[in-house]
Image 1 (tube, rainbow, N blue to C red):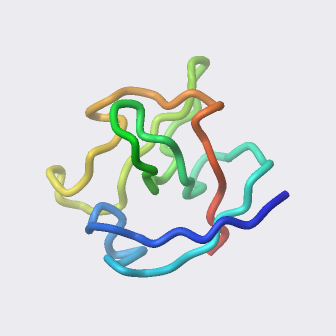
Image 2: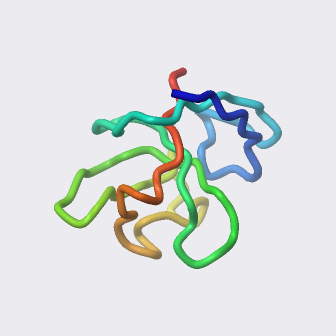
Image 3: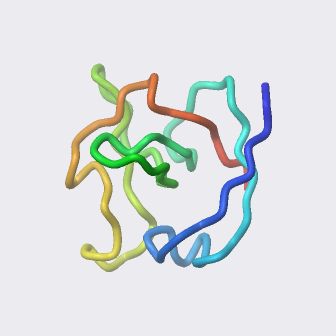
Length: 92
């Protein structure tokens, strides 16, 4: 297991994390329901930080914590994320 430092950009995980927060993720583990993960975005060359809302046969349904439905680009937009795209789990 390795530790990865991640900086939050944007408000999709507000109020859990704020824009500019620095957090650590642990790689090498499978996420469980409710975990916050760092994952590869399926369409862009960026990493995303989202919460696991559902575990499906074809991957993980990820969602931001921001209660504003327009406040997060997540699985509502791009569908489930495959297990191979999960980079690490944030233990807060």
